[in-house]
Image 1 (cartoon, rainbow, N blue to C red):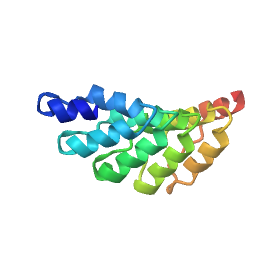
Image 2 (tube, rainbow, N blue to C red):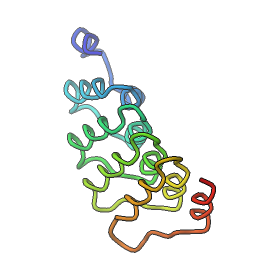
Image 3 (tube, helix red, strand yellow):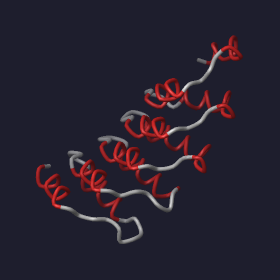
Image 4 (cartoon, rainbow, N blue to C red):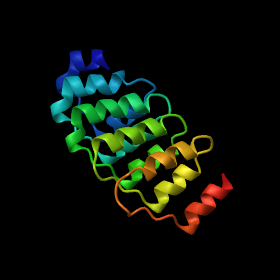
Length: 150
């Protein structure tokens, strides 16, 4: 990627699909390079955040980089939080980052069900989610069912 940007950078458009691929990559190097070289042209969309949240290998490092460099532009949506809650490796770390950097995150039934269905680390993720301020977290029958099935 560095070679392409150096040699043909003015001809290359960094699209959302390119960013999603970089956010899904096993290393945070590609997204770091894109942010460094073309950061002023790049828009971090919900789908890019979701791709990083789903990344079991380097999702935590990528999300930390995104939030550190562009955190004020990033909204934590139900979809990105649900993806993090379902991430079997990086999920707890990503959710902890979300909680550190954003005052309000949408803890919905779908997010809790994704966390409850995450075998092995479901309790860790649910404990993190329950630490959020406010009383808006609803423990529904569907959430309890997901917990019981795990």
